[in-house]
Length: 320
Image 1 (cartoon, rainbow, N blue to C red):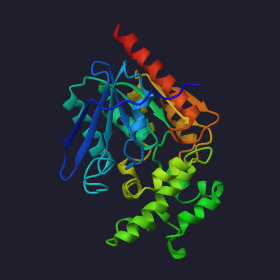
Image 2 (cartoon, rainbow, N blue to C red):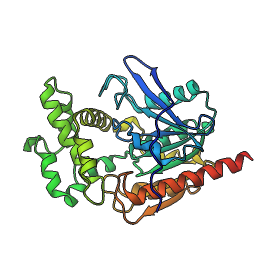
Image 3 (cartoon, rainbow, N blue to C red):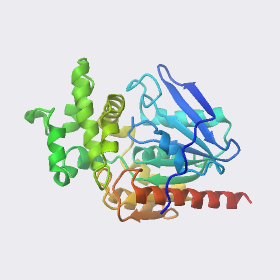
Image 4 (cartoon, helix red, strand yellow):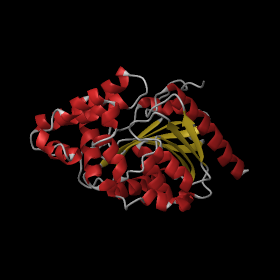
């Protein structure tokens, strides 16, 4: 089984001003002349982690990490103004032009798969390939499954802690109830709600309990951005038309792609990946038997690293 490459440091870091008040953090590592690959992180609001660089052969790839609006090292943290899917797509295109890249490989998981797909359907001529993990189509039923009724029956003990900040008479719409608290002028109420929302996700993200994952999701800096921005997007149906990604999947034809999905993914169930693969038959679907949702799970790491080399071979083979 493949394991992550050794740790590397960025050779360049950028602050990119987009629509006020947002400023994005962008970094480059690996080979400046290598195959460009951009990591599209999850959430929305999750931000990038340093280990994301380690999925890629640093001699082969020009590795780009971008923190989306309000996330990670981008500023202002957890900002909702001007934060919507179409703006994030436009930001990616600005980054591509800023870096002088003609076409790039998109590597995205969870919400990162959502944004990668919307970008690729908008600018298919700019995408050399797609490596996607934990597909999240952002359909109403997908949001309902994790935040209202579904995963709650698999993790009823964790669900109790997620319910705790919300009075019984508001629990018929948990996303709306959390949104009221996450946008409250009371900062203490905000952070308490954010930690409960975020820790629920972290606890459910791995097949086997992983305290490191839960601790990261519970960190105040991560929790406030993740919870506020996710809830904002889910209140607005991710700023997507009904079934937009699957309906527009024909635009992905000709783009080499690999879909990696854990069979026991409780955050984004496997039917998301099956629906996408049926609409995009050119992509290879890899169902990982011993995995849940997180990109840090060993079998998911192995599958993603193999996919990187496979898709890179396909891209470079076309160029020959």
